[in-house]
Image 1 (cartoon, helix red, strand yellow):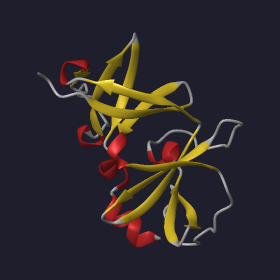
Image 2: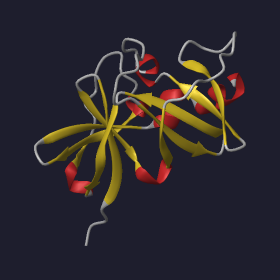
Image 3: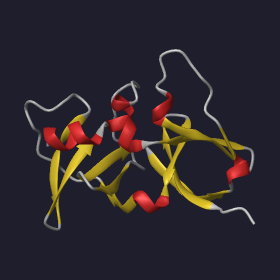
Length: 147
């Protein structure tokens, strides 16, 4: 029997992305954050979430897309790693999907795309979901030090 993994799917622009659900601490409405003057461009600032400092990340900017602009469905996905908490700014959250290993294709080798940033491409009910390796995308060691 093959093991099924769950992923939280979300939208950035017209594209759908996914991250392993076990990395997700919570999904919350946007609230004001404090800017940090010398932080990298993709680090929008920090906020205090029930006593925990969260680095607010402009995920589209980190992926070399146009910077995040809040819309009516925008939320922050809060993740917890050994290096601390990060909040990813996304356009909207779709749902939690289950993917078996056979539903995930290897990421294509594309010029200018770091293969470590992608866990693969998931196929779910005619949808293609780009599965992100967030620690690699954000280089969390450096991001945590910036915040």
